[in-house]
Amino acid sequence: RNRDHVNLSKLSGHSIAHIITRDILPYIASYVIMALILQISSGILAEAGLSILGLGPKTTEVPTLGLMMNWAMIYQAHILGKWWAYFPIIITIALIAFSMNLMNTGLDQVFNPALRE
Image (cartoon, rainbow, N blue to C red):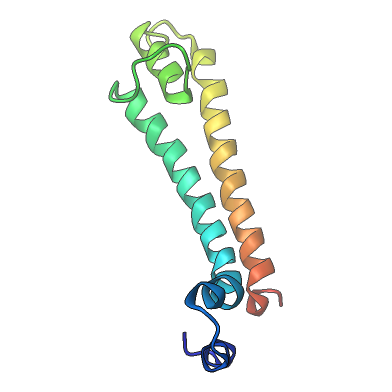
């Protein structure tokens, strides 16, 4: 808002929509993308955590990772010693969360020149 090119656009008589789309949006787009990546990762972890407890979606049309872990708990896989019911799901959740956070770190290094060194 206080950048020189924004003030120059205001003085040139450009509309507010033009100033937002041409001058402000390119600067905040990178931060919006990085925040979106973190929110997607957090949403996946939250859904898995709530579904494990039985508080997630009850539909079986679209099985989720948390719902699959809930099914393993309902059928007592941990008591019967069937660890393979949990292992692939836990690995998948961990890989998704790790890869999303790694993408966020990489984009932060690309968009923030001070971190490149």
